[in-house]
Length: 353
Ligand SMILES: O=C(O)c1ccc[n+]([C@@H]2O[C@H](COP(=O)([O-])O)[C@@H](O)[C@H]2O)c1
Ligand SMILES: Cc1cc2nc[nH]c2cc1C
Image (cartoon, rainbow, N blue to C red; front, side, top):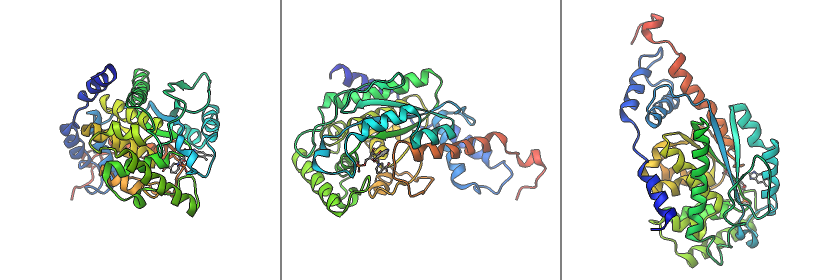
């Protein structure tokens, strides 16, 4: 085992199961509040999950960050996106200037946006950009491995390192976001490799390719899987062969948050595939995941199902960047406020059924 593998394995060994006692205490407390038992539905489930993750009934999740991992994709050469590759660095600059949808929605949710260059195919420099470029874009997975295993490990480490730094600054709630023209293709390839579902079920229109583009994407995914034959039991091998640098970075965000017992809100298709790969690497990490929305991207439902997650929102969004996750933070706030502000039957003098 080399140094990075050892470091990752040490980190994974620190990821534990949810605190079942805290879950039971949260559930019992919710039943003392002035409402029929269970009537707040998924908000109650969420309050219990947050207790299980953090070990606290009323965790302070006021410091929060959306980590937007950015990377480029050699597979764009196959004509798999409706947009040109230069949009990736252009959007990174937009994130840093505060003008993208994620900046608006994160501000509204009280979250900072932390943008990480883990593999953009352009030179970028900005005081607020986290510079962690592993390589300038992946290889074209239809013809070669997206990256080496070592590069995948470096990208995972970049995600863990960002979480560590933010945790040190007091951040206790994380959300995944990404930017990478072409990244629905590697995400679909990873989903097929990890779950065995059909290519048709995993590949969708991404930024909006037409029927010919969709057919090309499916063909590319089939060719890539034929070429690399990734092993589902080796998630790092899967992301290295047919994944993306920002996807590996998001695996690190999930694993880092789980190792700190922090909830991590999962955004759309790409984020969910990254979370699935992280959970395949470390099944215990599943307990820290909060699914935010169901994206319009064709394969997202299957990715959520593979994780056994039920999203809170269905807003017909398909942007990525962490936008659905930022919106779900309002529901996390709602669940926390129910636990801290609602009167009990005894306090309000309301008769129990
Ligand atoms: O989050 C999603 O479900 C989602 C669905 C479709 C597209 N995206 C975003 O669009 C880009 C990938 O789309 P594409 O067509 O270039 O593969 C990438 O920057 C993602 O953030 C994101
Ligand atoms: C403009 C644009 C913004 C995005 N944000 C995330 N993916 C994106 C893709 C495009 C094309």
